[in-house]
Amino acid sequence: MPGSRPSPPAGVWGRWSEGYDVRAAAAEEIRSVGAQAIELPLPTLEGAGGYAREMTEDRAQRQRELLASYIAAADALITTAAVPGRRAPCW
Image (cartoon, rainbow, N blue to C red; front, side, top):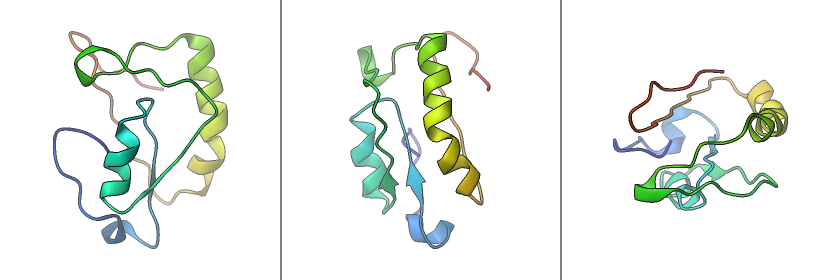
């Protein structure tokens, strides 16, 4: 949900909307569009310039495990990634 383009209010997407980002500052952006910020028991990955730092494969695996129940319950899933100078990663 967080990003350079404004998102529509969460109610437009259905009964409820949730969002997750590895950057703690993005939780406020998620809430600002009426969605619930998903909190995971993982350290945040804030990097320079507002971008997230790259995560280790172990961290990525743990994050996938923790998000699995949210993804399974979702009617739609939107993913984004911006890595300066690199192609966006895919799962």
